[in-house]
Length: 287
Image (cartoon, rainbow, N blue to C red; front, side):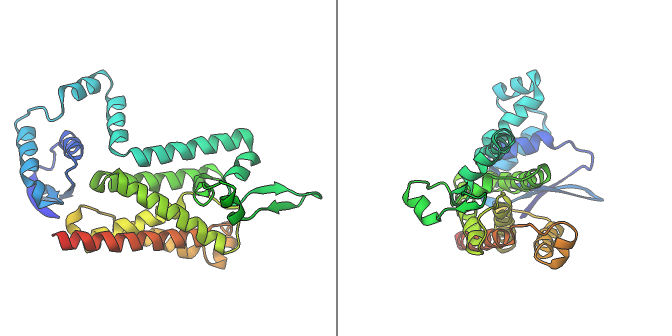
């Protein structure tokens, strides 16, 4: 990151930050005892940032008139619409997870059988009938390697996965575009699900494998290519990795966290680290 300017500690920078993100200018604002410091991710965008900064300091409007009119008529809806436009893949993924969760509440096991990694059913005698992934793919059910990521088995499971998805996904889309986020989603979703399936489990779900992939990706980008604009608090990395290790231990089962898709977490993390290593290497060569 490149230091641009120090602002007064009481400066309201919300409008400036909205304009910078609208122009896809990667940045951070940090606070200390002396005030707020504005940092720039890509020095090639310095001229554009300085132009917006000068407008903001002189009190000129930063956003198009149509966008200001929307905020005056309804600030919450306008700002939400802007965020959704900036992170469409993340928003669509979150919305689809909510839709599937609602469908599970209405249709129950039918949704799980449809979206599980293999076809599931009830055999005579009440036992679970488990199909084959290869046969399902040959039959045209190509969604199954990815679809378990959209299944969530409880409110807490859903809420925490959506929080991390929203936190990391918006950052990826803002700095590198929706195409990169879609790549991570598909690669990590399939990779995490196949890792769990290879461990011998067929009934599992959740976006946490993708969340761990995003964690690994953002962390490596921030460490190996600081000019990329990515940032993740170190304590968050420690917490999420610590949680992943904790759920792999016998202690997790003793306190009620034994039924966790650990292999999916690990598989997603490996995919995220691999993509992060590749793209951070490209970013370093370009700079």
